[in-house]
Image (cartoon, rainbow, N blue to C red; front, side, top):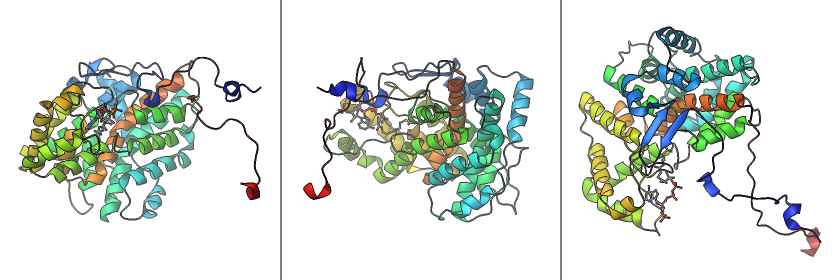
Length: 401
Ligand code: ACO
């Protein structure tokens, strides 16, 4: 007699938790979320305080090192990052291999994965110094990689980094500047991008971060692990929701159409969901959405744009917040609900939205990856399963089937 449970290794106690709704995969000291209260802390600091007062370099240092930097530490960190902003020149040929209409996330997956073939001196993951160099390289090169994806799509020459600018200002120049003209960074836009980058920097064990940790747990090359995170982020249930949210708001068009879409979101037979609404952890306001809403208003005012999409978004939020279905299921706007309105006003095509999310989340990914590798309890990530297939049976030759 074969004990089928032993045959397939299903002995002992198993928890069955599809989607990991209540299973902790690790211990972490980086980011804290209280989903019921709508609280998000990085290393103990509230996200709204960081978004208001900090720079992206400072938040990056904080996530990687655990403490806010002193003035000297910040200066050295910023200098180090600026030394790594350029891409190996041969990587430009990778871009030329893509179709012009390739999605920037497809390019990001390919090019970031390809970094593993270029930077061999930062791939010994047992060496903390090499891990830090890989982390600095990734943080520094992501704006260059994302901006080049944009430039390639519009057929303009690639712009080399200008390290005299801020992280955000340099990214804006590489994206919207052209070699023949001087590019003036608009401080309101720069400030909005700074906030957007900070708001996306980390979010504990979300799907893409868990993907980076899982890939990294086998000892894989750090650049390849981040490429895996980018692939996971791309989906519309995760980072792709900002693109989907703006497309949805455009489709709704005018506030009078909102009730029709609310009814569709509530209809169990309709797969439609309100994009930018709901969250696995937040059962209250996503604190990032509040900062996003304020930033959207500021940017539109500065640019003198009266975008009906913002009116539709604000109206939709108000209607949904008073609707029994959304109240009962605790569905609130998430970080993606307003970000598209801002990025659209700045001039990014929707296809770039998730690429910008990937750019900013890279710091969270590398901080979490470093934390995992340095954990003495770290093991290869290897979930189990509940086997529901056939019991053992004998092979049948093809002419007998
Ligand atoms: N519109 C309508 N109904 C919704 C929505 C929505 N946006 N989100 C959840 N629901 C409903 C579901 O139908 C489900 O109803 P049921 O209990 O009657 O079956 C209930 O609320 C719970 O939803 P789940 O999908 O089980 O919740 P989960 O935690 O798995 O999903 C998710 C969270 C994926 C974010 C979901 O809310 C969603 O699809 N939202 C839209 C996409 C989105 O905005 N994603 C961005 C997330 S934030 C980020 O990644 C940065």
